[in-house]
Image (cartoon, rainbow, N blue to C red):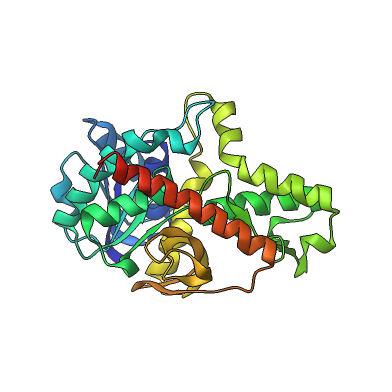
Length: 314
């Protein structure tokens, strides 16, 4: 348990993240901030009233004042416009860069030493933006993407194999978009790679559904985007940090030139997480096809970052 975790944004992702953080008692205090008056206060009070039933003693503070995030151990940034049906994550770039600029500046002002987890889309470009504005150390800033994509992949594999999700391990790398890279060679059922369980067409179908997983939910909801699994994926990262487990999770991190990628980019790679943040970026042995796909995905992230610079949004 840490002293304080702050969640920026009290929408569906932020509100659900607040709930799961509190119920897992990962911090003594969880602060949820939003610009909408009454929204974070109402959600905080509602969840606090569940505490006697759920059995947690975490204190939740809802606020409109960024000063309340002061000296946070971890700050989770969920602020941003969600997708609508027919939109790609890239379509959110200009609007969410403006939001991220304001939020990152406030976080840097009040919690410059916090570990930062960015969630807004387009994810990898938003981590880049937060880094540029906030100046956070490379090992203290990351984005939640691969954990969400990986749990979707695992869910689809379990359905296809007609087995418990507990038997499945799955991982995706690359940008959090339609060119993400589900690693079929490292995704298994009880240790057996899915490429040895399913035929090629089935594997390709599972990969494609994973890549379109977020859009599938957006098209069903029509007025919002995914939040239950997103919150779970965020908390998976937080738990690894708070409990100092050194778990290896796919996160949008500074590449450090690993896998032959641009060292200045933030892209989904396997990262060892602990109380210091990103402890190490791990290099898996990828097939040529997986490596080429990862490089293509990183190139797309670079294009988004270049677009931010060209439009002088920072």
